[in-house]
Picture 1: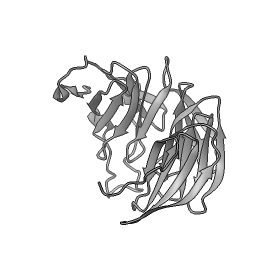
Picture 2: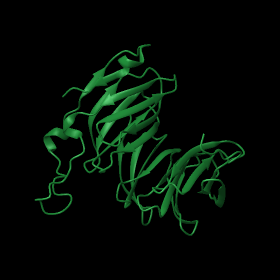
Picture 3: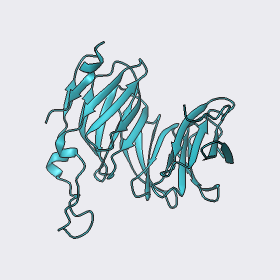
Picture 4: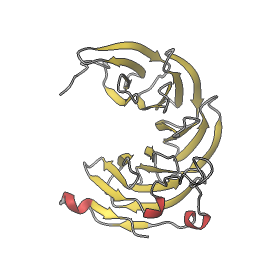
Length: 259
């Protein structure tokens, strides 16, 4: 144990994120408050309490510049906060209980998901809706996560299905089936080759991302840093599905999504 913050939230802490330098921690609480902490080797001090939500905070995510944080709540709102001034910038409202929110890799847009089974794209600078895609047909979406280039993201929820998406096209490109209960969390590996998902029955599954959806490193001989980030439309129309039964052997929970 390096450090602990006792009684960080009086009703329980429900979400966390930390800045890239590890010096600022943002926590969301069941009581609806977002709290900002300064992390030092021997002392952790609260430097701000952000009060706008009236329901539990389900997700907090800091942008790539460490200047903003978005909080998602079951009260039907997402709030974009200025992490420097510790003030509210914009509020996103929708007819849903927000469960997950995440900045795109360059911080210009925000992805949200929740009880209405929709994945929303929002402009970070004013909180306006860009588009919505149907992320599930039978239940709330509990988790979203993006690869480090922002080309693809994963979603998962109570329908027990792991879905891989093309961010720009908003289309589903791969599917993983294996969980026996509601999926509560999903994360990309830093190299973009694996997904890890957890479910309410305690199961943790590791998925291999199809090679065509791995992170593409731009070539130095191409113009522009995103020159190699092109999407093959024929690939995006094809879904891959893997089905398997949960097993008591943890090693057998690693499965490959075959092309």
